[in-house]
Length: 186
Image: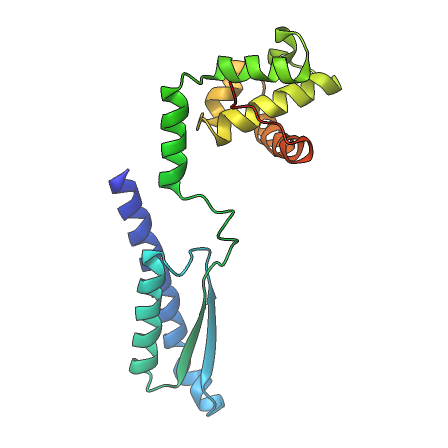
């Protein structure tokens, strides 16, 4: 995990550096065409508290200093709704708690059965019957989002494609929001 994060960080920093250098290489032609300062915009999904945001700020300042202020880079970090964003650490803690409380994919399936008042087979069936789709969607949403089960693993377990799992997760989220389902209560 640590290695993957560092590789991803190094890749993104290198990519940003490359973009800045290519932009800087084109500056002499652009500067001679117009004496106005050049404004570059750089948008990314990370919030301002992310480590890469600080790296990007450093690059932007460095480019401005190296070009004598002729190039200004405006950064647009991801803003997102803070109350809706769950950090990876919080998500993992929630998953560990659910595992410690005995929540498994089978237990989530049992909760879906009790909430929807259907028989157990319908949750695990293939098919497009509305009640089957709804139960499978609720199961997939909670299994992927809250238990952290890999979509490919879940697809093998249920016997449907990974794309169908992804779609079911989206539908499950809609069902939970519309109906206020609380699947993780005992």
